[in-house]
Image 1 (cartoon, rainbow, N blue to C red):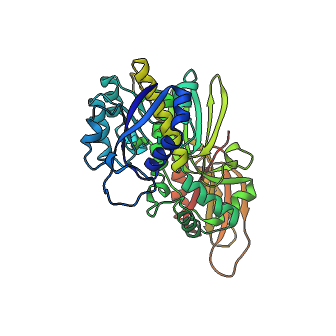
Image 2 (tube, rainbow, N blue to C red; image 1 turned 180 degrees about the vertical axis):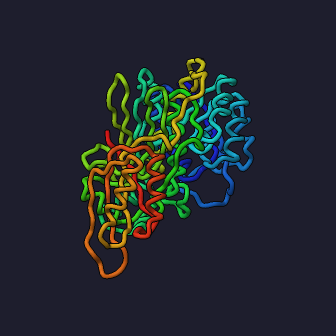
Image 3 (cartoon, rainbow, N blue to C red; image 1 turned 90 degrees about the horizontal axis):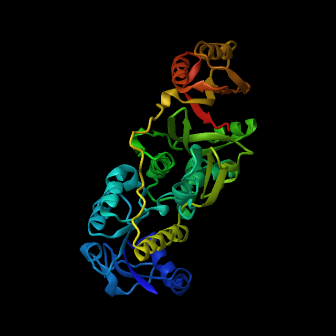
Length: 429
């Protein structure tokens, strides 16, 4: 039985989950894998802070060098989050000859090439299953199981906070504020949920997934980003009338050598497999040129699911140590990936106009759309109300984003329309 030393950077929610899993399943994992993972040191900020995990005080430290430079630590496991000092610690661990496991999506999405290169230079493994999808093995699926395929499409729900909010708004008729408050009370949303709600968290995850799918680093700042802030319950009602539900999707598609990458709220058919992903769950729908369609589903966050992914990575790192093998580099593509600008993306669209209820309004709106080559597929026009504008809802056939933006800018300047027009893209697969 080979004993492998582990150093943890961070003992928060995920770190505590990792400690509990390693403690509870210690003998089982040893019998199953032939490796005994032993936590040697844990970096914390405040030694006096009450913690969920019951950890021997002698292995706690506030000095990162006691983890990064310790000879008895073979694998450094970073569970701190954020860019710094996590980035500095990861690079230092690799330079010290340690294998590295991280759950940090932000640092990989923002500084991936630097960290990937450092791992390759050091000849050490870099494992990050827990960075995307919590307990769902999407990273290993892309890196290993589907590595023989060209990934034509990747469509995913990668943020449980947003999915929970949209589920509650759709199924219970809650307002955005009510659903957010409930998510925070149940521990599905942070006290400051801006990263989730803005779409930034999903962008970081998509950057990692697209990098793995297409073999070239996809910068987060090249990904179109829209979140769910400002989602209106009435759009969920109209969507249901057309047979759709609303999800925040991370989308990557390859066509004719170019890749489009985008995160935004999207209407999806109610019979689509991703429509069944409710609450705080994640779902990943992939299509490879040989394997066809693949669907993965599970909890995308939380101490236990994320700890499951982290410990699986620790075991993979331990196997590298036992075998003495050199890890496979993460990136091979020499030429940069050709990314399609958002203005060139083609999609179907949902528009909700707030219009003055008078004759000829619909013809004015449809006339502008026609001038820009945008064809209408369906229309719902509500009747007169005593006060204020009435909604006119349209679904379009496929149109290019550039023409859509130009047309809506012109429509919003019409005297009969109260801007801004609500726009949602529609997923058709």
